[in-house]
Image (tube, rainbow, N blue to C red; front, top):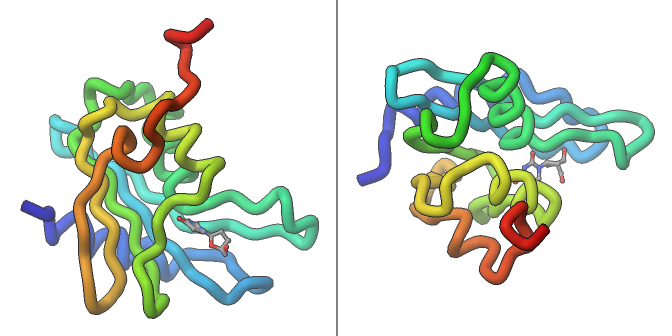
Length: 131
Ligand code: THU
């Protein structure tokens, strides 16, 4: 079942997006098993390639505070677009490293929601197990 509290928190985080170039705001939130939340929004840059996606910011915030993959209960990623924003390829590679393969990922816009996992989003991935 999709955690509506987590999704609502991600929508709140979307308001902190800094997206003057795309005008496309994204919010994200990591929830840990001990009830902590780590917030993220997309932060863009005039040097476009340096922009950072909301979900990466949320997961990096969690890790920066000592959280590790086994501590993470779920990740929510939300947008205001007509379609649900699925993580970009770069974020999928980050998430396959920093989440467990079956950690719930909730994707939502204002009209629809779905639940997935990084295993589903990035099958046949390259990970530390390959090195
Ligand atoms: N973006 C995210 O933050 N997460 C996604 O899942 C898709 C894309 C951001 C990157 C950029 O700031 C804007 O959305 C448009 O691509």
